[in-house]
Length: 218
Image (tube, rainbow, N blue to C red; front, side):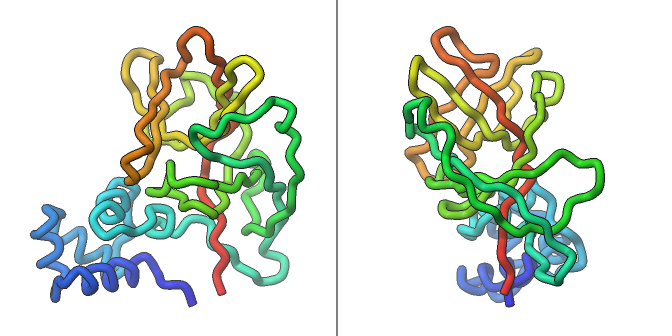
């Protein structure tokens, strides 16, 4: 049985040597009432809180937000296509774009929603939300600057000549309709950010919006 987000917080707090929730909250500067209710499960964890907890406890943001756990009950799942990869700094020939794909069972989506796809994450550049070896779930869409929201995760393809890199990046607003696409990681080597719209000499395609990750429950 997979631990709930509340169980993860409680176990992480005990492993760090804090006897009570209030002790951990005061040590890290968190709101005591909010943290206590997150740890006892009476209040859902927000994205902002999940990032703070993940950074201090070494936990995964996606797990704390309980993203895309699979209900194996017959009739509650559907299959999506998974292919390619997401990794920063891995430049490949454009001819490799048509990778072999597999099918993955995920919880059924709501009617009239965009089709979902999956992409394996093969590095730690987005490990505060999706760990290396896990599969990000995204929806393809025609993204433009009016639809980008700070904090959003996007699946990005960068092209330089005959080479391309595909990665998942976090959106930061830096000006009027100007954004920076950054890693979302606690690993120091992942620091490269790119501008969107891109600078000359490079093309950036926003393939889609990341909506969660695949987590298989026992």
